[in-house]
Image (cartoon, rainbow, N blue to C red; front, side, top):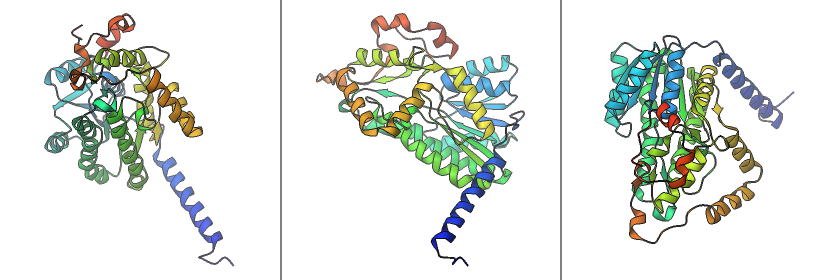
Length: 345
């Protein structure tokens, strides 16, 4: 007879709990889950990866709500998606503001739509040595990548619980799994989003709500024009564009978008699009000390060093900074395809 407080009993109880969780995940994860006539909310959905996902969802027959800060960008993206035969509505809002977040959910619900899928995709990037980083860079990154998604999730959950199901997709980054030099604010906020997302996955499954954490590597979307730079501005832009614009170091955004939609359909726990990102995560897991040394070597030998001049602390938009010879490898067609702004250079 096995005592209830014995190690054997605890092992059996633990194994039973794991098996029950596994079967529950299998039951909720359906390859035949259809997005047809389901409501999908995408933040940052007017350009880049967000637009690529919006295209993929409307092709699946979803009712897509785009959320962004620019009315002009919302109009252009909406027109394009409607021309594909998609059902699209737009909300001009800033997810960094809690009052805007509540308005997003209230608007969707008031229209008669459910909250079936929430995609937290809005993002910003600040590039430069930590010596030049300002507190506002961290505050803005956390407001965009952590507090905004958290507020949206909290506002959506009562509706998803009432429906008995829902899906949440949190777009973090490889920078939320492996720290990248010169991206301190971005890394910190994306790591926070990963922690939140994976905690929610464990706790919300019993309510029929599946949370997917996505940590993609760099993608070719032309998004380099939106980067905020500090330090040696042209040099910072050159290394970032070099990494984000070539097939060797980045992947196609439309391919990543299709992978994300499929992961959402199946209710997967995690997804890391891009072989480069998966290799970085694997190397960091196998040899963390070696990976840390490699990161330090990259910072010391390949990346721009801090600039002591006062102008280096000033933030500049990449759209205003000429990357020099790197312009030859930046595909203009990619920038236009994903509706990125035209740079001044």
